[in-house]
Amino acid sequence: MMDTQNELHNNVEQETDSTPYTMLEAITEAKRCLNCKKPMCKTGCPIENDIPDFINQLSKGNLGEARAILAKKTNLPAVCGRVCPHEKQCEGHCIMNKKGAPIRIGKIEQFIADFDADMNLTRENIPPKTRGKVAVIGSGPAGLTVAGDLALQGFSVVVYESENEPGGILLYGIPQFRLPKDVVRRETKRIEELGVHFINNCIVGQDITIDQIFERGFDAIFIGTGTALARELNIPGKEFAGVIQSNYFLRMVSMYNDGKINRQEVSIKDGDNVLVIGAGNVAMDASRTALRMGAKNVTVLYRSTPDTITASQIEYEGAVSDGVKFMWETTPIEYVGKDGKIIGLKANSYGSEVIIPGNKILLAIGSKPAKRIISTTQGIDVNEAGYVITKERPYGMTTLKGVFAGGDVVHQPATVVLAMKEAKKVVAGISAYVDAKKLLEE
Image (cartoon, rainbow, N blue to C red):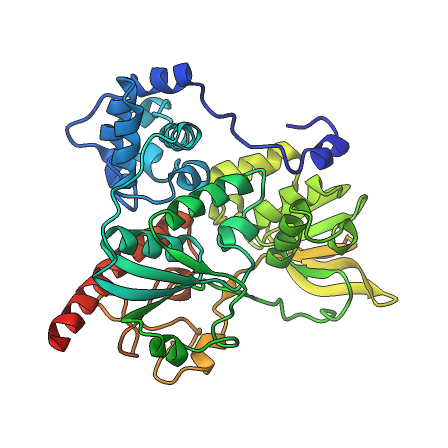
């Protein structure tokens, strides 16, 4: 925990939550693994990483082999090693967790990926791109997974990204202190080296349509655009200045850190009294980032009790450690303003109506898919909530032939690795579809 708000502010770009392992620490930790016959850690991993195998190779000093084993299941090991909720997944299922001392699988995965990048240990054998041509829309976890996996299977892949560089939520939605941006850029570079081509600054549904992409000779299209529209809190006073979407705030901080905008364009200023509504990982990221941007006080308001929050335990504990305050069983009633600006929030807290002072309010109550692609394409059905409807066979195909979707645009927003899990299933669907299509054409 930083000692002062100034230190929090000054270290907005350099700080990471977890100090990486040294070589000795990583190998020592790997040697603790029992190499179970029925590895529960693998069961707990959504993408079923071969955890005991890469840990065993690391324990013997075989870094190249450890990285090769990782590469069979994930294109984003340095990302997963940092942001996955390990305490709920692999580490939470580790047999040694019963004694409160699970193998630190996340830190081991991070170490292997970082060591490989630093030493340039391995490169996958890249097959010729003769199997088909696939377009991927969006370069978040789902899009990058689909692109990398298909490239390794011999597909020619082009990724359309609306921002000026790939990475999606990994680059613009997860704070620097949790996921350094150079790590994201390094991982996307590795995927590019597999033969994936990125077209940036291209908004599908505006600059180009699904139909026009097919006209360019693509056999299939994958939509992995996530949930771009933040949900509003429909209570009186929302017109007051100072009500800000957390996703927007996090994106602006990321752009400020990259030198793309000036400090004045970031909504949280030095000395602000900030209220955050919601208790998921986005709320934790926003509250901790607000402190790092100079906020004097940050208070998270949540309608229920601590045991029902959707944020991971480690992110909640990180927020508490940073100095974020929490008000439980608190339901917003009305934004309170003066002279057009927010000065507080009226809420029902523990059965009593109170006014909580604050000059900035960050909303973190969920998001939903945008309609830009759907509204410019005929034949893609969505459910009542706006999520794309997909089929089981071929897995991930929408109601429009040849168009697939996966990740948060199909399901409720989830974690990075869950988006990757779904994406891998869609890859199988796309592969089967394109192979069948080519066979029929012959």
